[in-house]
Length: 114
Image (cartoon, rainbow, N blue to C red; front, top):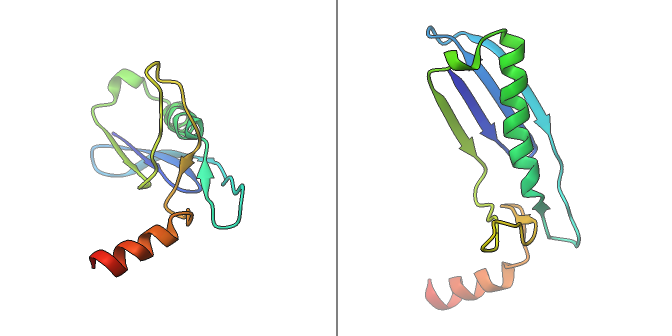
């Protein structure tokens, strides 16, 4: 079985056997893009590369046939919007949970709407 977590600092995959013993794992690290103070972004391509690389390397380390994998579980950081156009082309970096550019709007909502 494969478990894969897409986190803020990187993606980790693990392979466990049917008894729950960790057979192998791999971590793919990525950083933050901070174009201005209070902003926090990431390139969504990092997520895809992280998932594919960590699973591929974990399978190689375990020495198993990918066809023998019976289950895959995924988890990810939230919220991280990925904006694409009609052709699935990325429009911009993801604004992640650490981003503070909408602080004024949030305060207005709290004040005026509870």
